Image 1 (cartoon, rainbow, N blue to C red):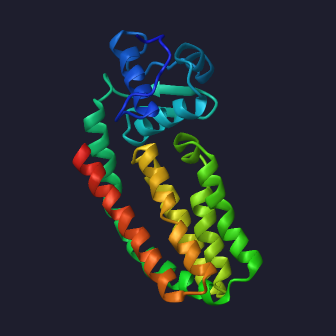
Image 2 (cartoon, helix red, strand yellow):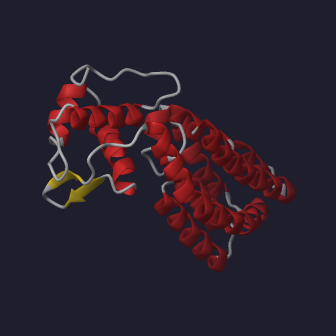
Length: 236
């Protein structure tokens, strides 16, 4: 099992399959507490999955204190065993829920305004800059999309188009803080991809020079983000 290639499983993202494989390494005695895990190159060859997915699995365990990453020294197990996936999902949501909700509360107010102003002020070139990440969203697979910054690019492009440097700076700070919370790694890749599709009504309203529709669409987008956290909690 531990050397078989990973294949898509409904309801289980590849990074979570990586976590299961990591747990199997521990259970099989290949890695013990304070022991070093095999390199990414070795695990990539064994499990036949990209290093990006392997890193995502380890990152989830690092966030919960199960694994320690030492610069230039590899990754080490800090516990006697790896918690089961349900427990890890609950822990990640419990840790990230309140900070994310507070950030989104602030972002919804600010970005609803920047969207409305962009609908009034965006030049054709700025509209194109807002549209670009949406085209990438369609072109990329859900898993690949999660490893890009197209979501941030979209929101920052709107902030630049609003014509208010104070709001632009504020949005940049809030987006950066949201990225640091790692929300895109708390939901399924398909759910993350679906949330990106909620950007389209915002762009359409900006292109149509309809500030109220832009404001409303941005608020609806943040409502969908909040709902995705509730779904994640229920599935845990």
